[in-house]
Image 1 (tube, rainbow, N blue to C red):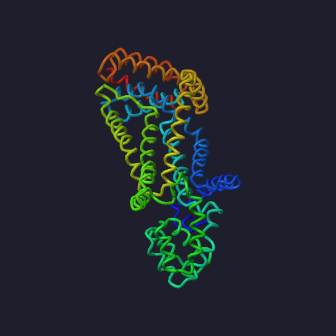
Image 2: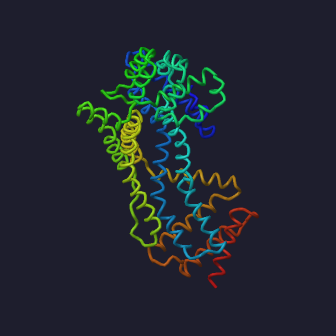
Image 3: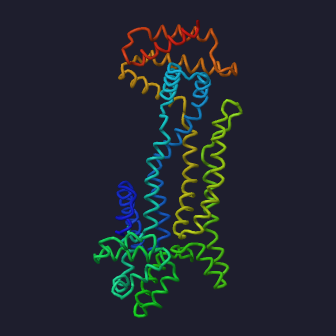
Length: 436
């Protein structure tokens, strides 16, 4: 595999994931090569489809979390409004308990959505690494660089020459590595392949000018790579900006249109994908100004993302742009299917099942399920009613009295030190004190 995987991996997480995904890409390219269409563009599309299908369970779980969160948010907001002007420890503890009870009721975790993203992010970064370094993962593509690489290494001054290539600076550490300096064959080969894999057609042709005796080897390697990289007439190893420049010089306006289509399609498909994602509606209540600000920021970012994707796809190799477009198309189709699946779910039934699970967990923790259920109902129902009836976040005297009565009834019995029940007694005592 390419030295970039050994010397530039940020930590030890991406390497193993990228290696695993590399095996999938290798398998896909092996199959399409056997049926006579060894094409990197087709391999990227098939690879994208396979990967998003594999990640579909995580995506469904994430969307289910979003739906349950939307239904849960009014209760959370009511609890936050109730304790809005209270900063003492007892009030904070009470608010945390009520919040946890709501999360338990809906069967979600405050960090649930973040966890899904944390799991997916290394996979997405590894996907980018595989697609951006195909010779490192697909032996058939790596073989195309030989015998050119060996013959190029043997030429006097070849290292200094190849360092002048536009992307060579990205691999500067590899040229300074002891293995390269000491002439370790595999390391030197991989470094040359890394640079050549990122080089433009003009830089490839410059090898023929500098070392005329390698012309045949350059033509052989370029012929194979062009075959692998040709997708609907475009060399996806070059960036659309480079393709456009070359096409304009050659007067091929059809090629210009083809080059522009990649960043345009990237922006359009990204926009469609964002529109299909579940959207939370802005709250009209002034109490939710902070949340509204965050949602507005999210909308602004969603508007900028298609523009940014177009810019990236215009300057990066067209192969990455193809992956971006294919990924957006697959996600959009996936989102339509998931939305239909989620809409068919009985959220009330899911909440009931979650309540049963929560009760079992509480019983294991030494808290009677009936007591915690009554506590959750007492808080969420009364807070919700109070929030709708009045804009004042505080409970009325009657509601406080009722809360004290119920907390006494359910939590003044068999409270173990440090248990949830003992903490509930503290809340009860706080409420009693404030009723005086």
